[in-house]
Amino acid sequence: MSSRISCPTLLSRVMPAEAAAALIRHGDNVGISGFTGAGYPKAVPSALHDQIRAAHDRGEEFRIGLWSGASTAPDADGVLAEAHGVSTRLPYNSDPTMRALINAGEVDYVDAHLSHSAQHMWFGFYGNLDVAVVEVTAILPGGLLVPSSSVGNNKTWLEQADRVILEVNHWQPREFEGFHDVYYGTALPPHRLPLELTDAMQRIGEPYLRVDPAKVIAVVETDRPDRNSPFSAPDATSGAIAEHVLTFLRQEVAAGRMPANLLPLQSGVGNVANAVLAGLGASEFTDLVAFTEVIQDGMLDLLDSGTLRAASATSFGLSDIGVARFMENISAYKGRILLRSEEISNHPELVRRLGVIAMNGLLEADIYGNVNSTHVMGSAIMNGIGGSGDFARNAFLNFFLTPSTAKNGAISAIVPMVSHVDHTEHDVHVIVTEHGLADLRGLSPRARAQRIIGNCADPRFRPALLDYTERAWADRATARHTPHLLGEALSWHQRYLDTGSM
Image 1 (cartoon, rainbow, N blue to C red):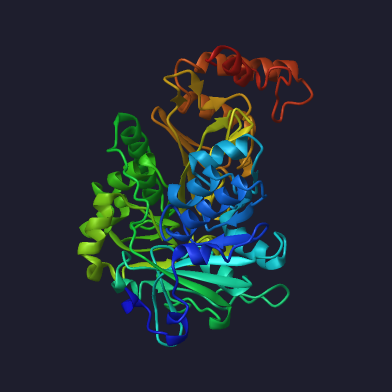
Image 2: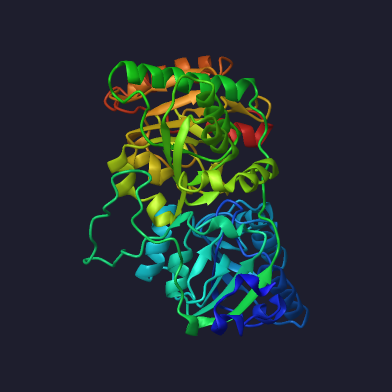
């Protein structure tokens, strides 16, 4: 399979995954590639799982720190969690097995803004990076690396790691060469310079990853697919949310606050986000551009229809059908899709300069507009903040989208006080549920409460929310800016834990 490796020095280091995994030691911090189940190493984590289990069977301790770009897959996060071989995980995880260990207290989880993760590692906040395990599409004669289906934190991992293991995946299309823009102009403070990117599709880097060949201790060849996640067709709830967003965007254009082709779009991952993209595809909007993290099926639809002119991201997040379509038409996407490092795709400076429209999900919002996007009932992590904070705080306009209830109506997404805060009321512009949209820009807390309850809360919960709000106003005569009844602010969550319903 070595047709993908044209560098003689690195070709000489090809070995089986088992031999490569044996070069990773207990206590190592290991930075792996991968973002939303794309571009993660497929063979070394599974081989490392076997090595860890064998060590445990011998009564030996074997755990590693596991760092990535974002989520990976069952054959990376999942197998290492199943082996109980991870001590620390950062900066994002969505694997259910790993999540269970985090919530059980076995794995320390550092949930970080994705734009911060590479620089914080470079600053030395996380400790030393011992090994990088990075998937690539090909190794060129001079040792340059053709990235695969995600870039994530790969640039920093390859630069900063003491030792490097490369997985060359023949499943990734060789035509990927030219799809990437890897920026090598970053520096540590106080030597930073402005990022000279003024258009979403402007190139400021190069199409390859670099690595010092002297640090490469192993090269492993694979032919395995990414974790491709299917998305459900839009249902009535997600369709209603999408229509509220589209109506609002039309109003913003009519008011002269944005151009007819909108501003660069960022969309979080999931069925609701894909429903909004589908709504855009059926709308009058055209000549759109995306500056986002993940290219989902919905964005391929928009690219194919011509509604979306181009998309900049750091990763793919496609279904099996989406992957097949991309592979079949890959030449048509070259020049219209650009993959960058996540420290660029999520960079606050660029999000603010480009005027991004950000659309992300939430678990719950409270009556004043604070948003919890990560924790169930205040304590159990779901996935993580990911890039939502990078985009929301710096966006020209942000939307937080959610069904108004969960667990068949037992849980209200609108509550008196969120049980965990990821996005403060100062960073939240618009909240949308299937019942309506609350534009919170320029409103006082009391006005925000009235709009969120009246427009977004499920009708079954509105009376109780209004009652709480009015009693808090009456009770706190000298503290009416954001009045709360502290003795019952989180009582809805406690009631759910006690009875199974809010």
